[in-house]
Length: 588
Image (cartoon, rainbow, N blue to C red; front, top):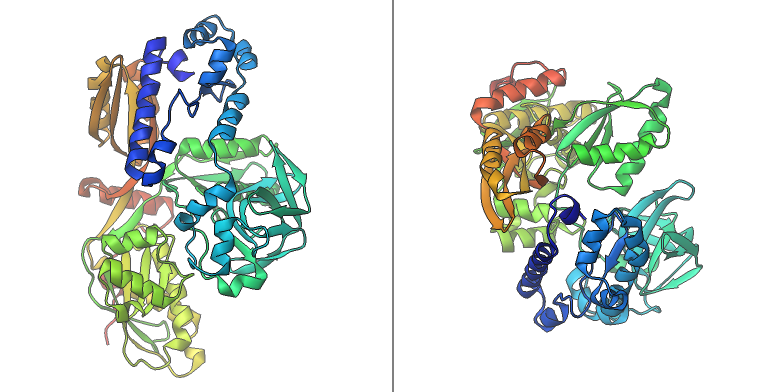
């Protein structure tokens, strides 16, 4: 509909644009599909694996529908021009086109699982469990892959997942591999469009809804409790291509509404893993993080519809702290001066960073497996890798015990891990999360009396040591950068490039397609807040539309980094002066 209403393309230009999209999809299939599926999966208007339409306006058609109804694309454009949108919706309902394609082209589970399981199952590739998955056996052990979690206003949390093996029934005890807990299925149901039909027993091959599993998240693997000790890894993790990079504070207009607001925000974050809510009980501040202002605005709109009134602050960018070189070894004493910790931080190599980001190494697998993967893929010494104490999966940091022969270290291990997580969650520059650090505990002296080595002594001392080493390693503030794609008439290319350059952005490519130009590039998220939308509309007279997505983190230019750090520290109520490494270093 945007091609017709906004860009006002002719029928020939619409077909040319859609043909290019189909060709690009087929190029991806050629590049990535298994050899036996390349031809079978190719998209084509002729075999009805392609539908044209508008989800917003509720119409769609395949080649078969077009021929049956005697409709041409020029007829649809004419209907838009004459304001007959409802007529198209009735004649060409979008659900008919989609259902026809599903029936014709989507394989049944018994056939599909034979070749899909090897790609998505990270557990053992032999034995009875594997055989049950491959054959989609209703008689095998229950194994479910969770792909969505929603909050129903009446039923509560509804978990949706595909049953790959076994039969699910009400009252069944299932083990959640990622959450490492057991829960009971209270209700099972099948979907009939948007509705759930309660069904007491559901066999493998179905996509089902479950109640009672409030600890489950998207990407979870559910298994029958009887086989939980036989399955160490389940389905591959869901990897999101974007990250929360913008935050707003949310405050109810009436203080008594705060508990209800927090509850509604939690429900929203359950349904959308790209949203993160945090509430500081000390300051009373409630923050919501998302991929961009529009993402946050849409989620809050759903809450407003429920009658809650609240204020929303201006969007601010989320930053990360990191280092540009290895830090020095730093000694930090505990507050009572009876314990000593020596710490040294270093930059994480890109291969290790990507292994953590991708979820290939995590704390649900054994440390031996972690060491093997790091040795084979990142060149780590396997013995040193086995001394990893903590993998920070959220901000991609590692904590390693590099000590030798230190007495009583195991007795404070968990406390030191807590201190490590506290330190990397709020860095020394601006209280922003740290990323890409390898933190090594190189030596320690632990007091023999447990009363003198509790959390109040060990947590702040490990944090001080980490801060001191980080500040000695030329720390930097990393800013999030969007990939941006702008579509506009070719005569506007110069004005658009000028605006992107003003915003510290870089143009990566320009492609002209007849009456349309597509400009791609990168732009700091910070520069897209505020007046960017108005400025873009101004220089293009409203004839451009654009989309952004998170691309990467990049160091802030030195010319503005200090000002940004001071700005953040002021907003957070911190001392404006940036600390020095020496402030965290103790002497023997």
